[in-house]
Amino acid sequence: MDTMNDFANRPMPPLPATKVSVPRHTTAWLGVQTLVIAVFSAIIALIADGIGDYGAERQSQGLLSESSSLMVSDSASYCFALIAISLISITLIEVAFRKYVNYLQYALIGCALGLFYLMLLALAEFVPFWAAYGIVTVITAGLITLFVKGITANVKAAGLTAGILVVEYAVILILIYIGSLALLIGSILLFVIIALAMYFTLRMRQTADGELIIK
View 1: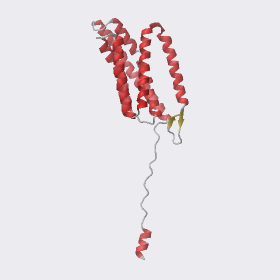
View 2: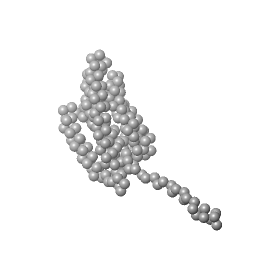
View 3: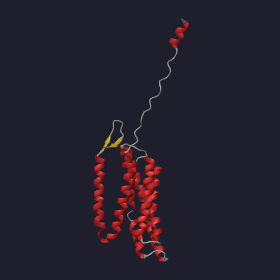
View 4: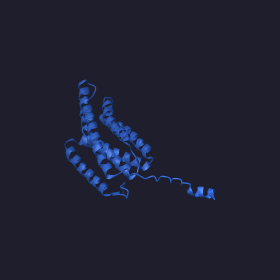
């Protein structure tokens, strides 16, 4: 009888703790992410601008042609837009595919995009500008695409990244060569990009736990 009472009075084992899923992709996170991307893009753009100025110095030393120096400088002037659009695209891919990209990985992608201009300057000393631009574009876009594929383990996400980068670099090359029409075409393209950003924000929804998704 005492044994039965002891068994009845024995404390129940604690129930296993329920793991609560904390949403990562929230509206607050998106706001902070956008601010961080803007600041980081501005910093890399300043460095790229310095690379453009260094191109003029290389030209004065007879190592770079005048036309290539001007084109390197012109391409560097689009650095902020290129990096900001690229990193925001990665953010949208992160939300759409429900993957996690940490800030170190964002920084590495941004640095690769910034290093583009230094490699472009170095290669333009040996080959025509258009050839240097094409080679460095393939190298940079390929590296970032493989990196995104490794992060997300998703071929579609990597393909979207590659497509966005190739289109961006192609547009910038066209803007460099069209000269006087660059402002008009660039303004129209920025308007289109803002319209696309509005479209994707309209497709964003919040789940019951506050997680952002793109439908």
